[in-house]
Image 1 (cartoon, rainbow, N blue to C red):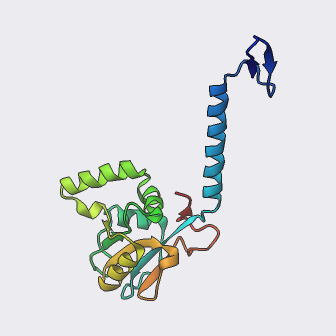
Image 2: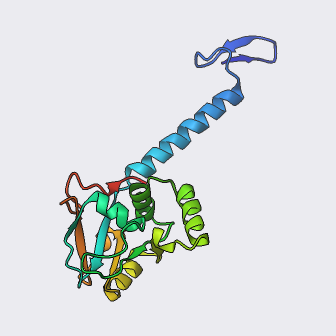
Image 3: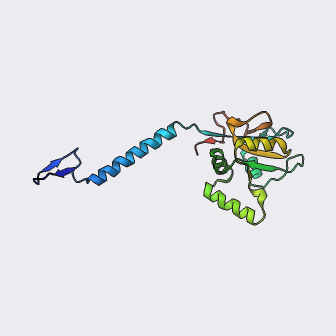
Length: 181
């Protein structure tokens, strides 16, 4: 940067000739913000979503395809004829964002539009019911015989039966419902 002194003398500062002070300040601010973002996200563990069913349900493993059909409402009954009730954590949770991207291939705003449309046209089976936190989903899955839900994998408790996805469980290296949100 070239600074002009009181006597009209020009001085080269930091080898940045032609860069204004404001531009330098903006670049520095952006660099600080980027570094802060990297530090915050570096400490964040990837999200793992567990699929859980009511303990009375005998299903132990579902394929990715079967799960997508269940959560999209294309499959509405279990093999024993029991109606399927899909439950989800709230849209503000990281596991919800990951699961919606996985099941529907949509971002949060796209999914919200999809869910609103499904509700408006009376096709509520196409969207899982939001129950807020993982603990609430676990409670209701434990109470409703045909229920299936997705929760934070770390929240799974003995009141429900975890389901393997494509033969894999949370924590397995290739488990499909793992990632950043």
